[in-house]
Image 1 (tube, rainbow, N blue to C red):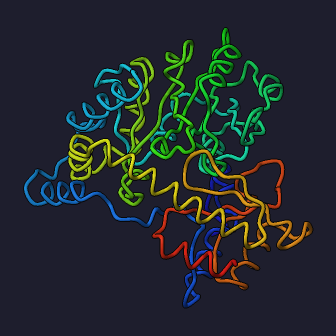
Image 2: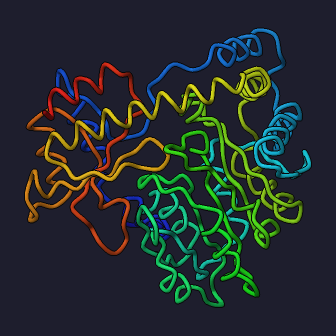
Amino acid sequence: MSELAPLSRRTEHLREASILRALTLKVNELPNGINLGQGVCDLEMPAPLRQAALESISGDRATYTNYAGLRPLREEIVRRMEERYGLSYGVNEVCVTVGSSMAFTSTLMTLVDPGDEVILFEPFYPYHYTGALLAGANVRTVPLTLGEDGIDWSTLEQALNERTRLVVLNTPSNPLGKVWTAEELDRLSALLQGHPAYVVTDEIYEDLVYDGHRHVPPATRPGLHERTITVSGLSKAYSITGWRLGWLAAPQALSGAIGPVFDVLAVCAARPLQHAAARALRELPDSYYTDLCAGYARRRKVLCDALRSGGFRVQEPEGSYYVLADYTDRFGPNIAPEDACFRLLDEVGIAAIPSTIFYAKRTPPELRFQFAVEDEILDEVARRLG
């Protein structure tokens, strides 16, 4: 193979050994292994969603859709954003994508050139980081914590410069569970005044917000709408992570540029799944979403209590379905996160994710657990950890 050209430099960071793959293989080998690592959302999907997909497969055409998606689905997304948040978008300002990750990737490819800079809040969703590197961007990180004063504003201000193209928010966030407030978004808006950077906001967990917190889309705040690309989808709310169905919404100048890039990358999202999503968005009552959130809030408490009983330090997330847990009291301060993951697997057969994949500059003694699983599994987790 020496006579062939080398693989691209832009993908070097993706060819590193995968700790996630190693952990998944090991937990799958255990006869009673429990995987609380990857957030696969192993719950039942709503019945109208499954039925509509089957009807589309048996009776509808099997051709491409418009790259932006079927119009009935885009109309439902527009209605949802208007009714929930007062956000006004036209149908042509929405693009249905192959998962929210493809919406993010298409946005990166449209707005970022090699050498441009992208700001992420740390701990970050790993695909935001690896996606930015794949686009050739230089990534700057800003520390983020739960609670008041959770945003390091001075570091954010220092990170902004003439090369900054995107400021990426994830609210509610994975892995931290941070929910941005209206006041924090307004402060961000003030900081960006006179600056050309765009805001990309990943809101895939918008239905999962707890303890009186409220999901506030950045696009609703003064000064942010025209520069914001909102990314969301149905993977988490409908427990269809494998369907890969998401969307983006932005003013026409942005959505009209990003959509054709998505067209080149994927052509369109799967037609039967789009039909199914349109029906579910149209037919599912508000009670579905409130019941969904209540169920996750219950699971959050079970997992957090179990982790505390097992010697972990836990701060309950404000949203999403993940918990970052400090393992110092259980394993000591001198064990690396990857080693702590394998030790937990050996001791109790539970897989988590090491903090190393959520940080670019530091690796705190933390593991990430997810609670998008059936109640019986969390009860078993509590038994093992206790």
